[in-house]
Amino acid sequence: MAGGFAPNNLVQDINPMTWWGNQMGFININTQASGDPPLEAQIVERVASYGRQLGRIGEALEVLLKAMKLDDGNPRPGLSDEDRQAIQSFLAMQRAIQDVKAKAAPTEALVREVQRLKKRVAQMQSGNGRAKSSKRPAARAVKRPAAFPKRRPAKST
Image 1: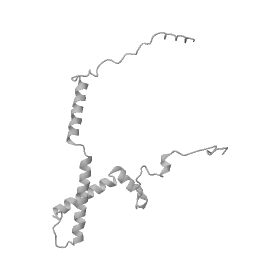
Image 2: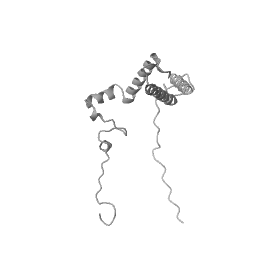
Image 3: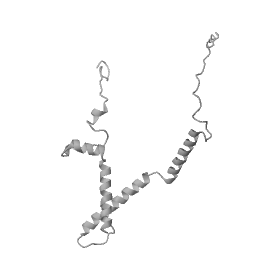
Image 4: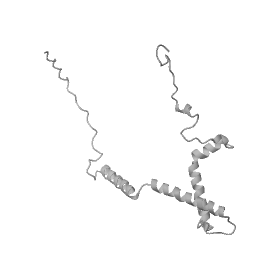
């Protein structure tokens, strides 16, 4: 360093792929603990994410619990208090997940507004709307004057 705090030569790698190795985001799923990491990666990329897989398992388990009438919290022979609590905790978690999904889903009013706008765009494209039809001729090039006026010299004081 010559007389300052900054070095004379500074090089910094700005390649995001090197920041986290092969990680593509802030959440890292370690497939190295898997018996077949390439196969697991293909499943996640081509079939379903981990979240989607867990969601399907949860939905299937809910169906089974309802079919066996184990979803009402009533005591059953052969089920301990811990078993019933585990079932109730699972069902409570499923309800909480559904609540979050419902809040994230578009409202009916928003869906209606999007449908209205799509209809309006279709009308405009067909020429039945207020806007001109998209079948108008191409825009013409603007002609520029042959010579721009010369600037006047500044007044001297």
